[in-house]
Length: 210
Image 1 (cartoon, helix red, strand yellow):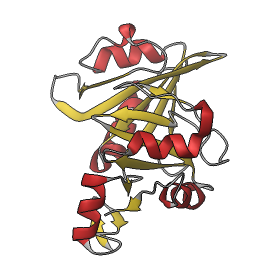
Image 2: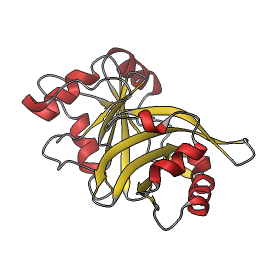
Image 3: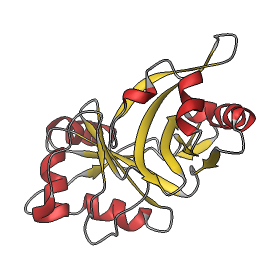
Image 4: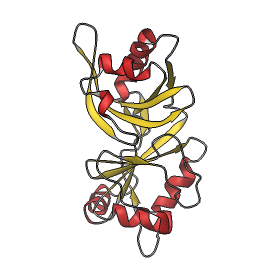
């Protein structure tokens, strides 16, 4: 185990060389739970994000995402983040902001300061686990786990799916980012979900990697 931006994470699980080759030739499973996950929702959520995010939030469609920069009132950079537009709730639009680990508290404080009565800001980092599945066989591994309902997810898109009998998690349960897949689940389920992703499926398997 090693310290990474305030979190204890495994530097490697087995031989680092074996993990490297698994990612390059098949699929490697990484625990990226240290990334911040902040939900911004409510009638004023889009307006708040539009005022601090460098991309046009109004152009995001449900299930899509954009990389961008969060800025302060003076224009200085607070963090580079990935912003997802989630399915709306009864009281308004809903977004998920994925931050760098070291910036989570700063971003959370900034959103909380800006939020009015019509915006809800919730830190989901410790409630929702997140894994990254990387390698050339990513789609094949997920297809083996999701079964006949699997459909390839496009770049910067998110979609709910059921993996190996684990109920559809929340939020943005499966998304594609720069070729890899990010899968999320409730903290009560991460060991089960991660273990299933690491088990052979139809002759395929992913290996845990640090």
